[in-house]
Length: 171
Figure (cartoon, helix red, strand yellow):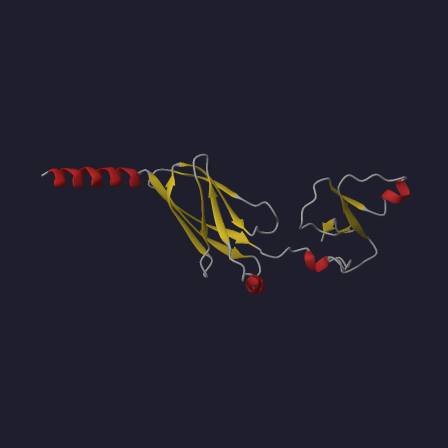
């Protein structure tokens, strides 16, 4: 009799605990299908909330799943990170809820192809294209400053190298 009561107590406790958690499922969507060859590295999805940190390996079909997610505001990111850098998805998971969403993923910096070529992808010309400088820059005079486009103080590992004044396009 004690065994039956203990078993019932355990089953009720287990069902109450699992009912208070949710599931997060997702899929990475490649921005460019040619980038599939760069996916040899293992990709990890990282879930973080105020009370939980978890990670799972992304499957070969680029899907992932987190179970037993506590009801909270959740942040999901991918390692190695996607370009542009710093993308993370934030959403709320309620008790017993299953969330599914698709995340764009690019393992390659979209600007790495344009590092050497200063031809604008929009107008196909070079004469109004300026190099972009990042960081805290000081110039001796205005004439020197007109030769560059200032990209801002924050420096990331994936930023455009060129700016077309004609089309106001960074590439």
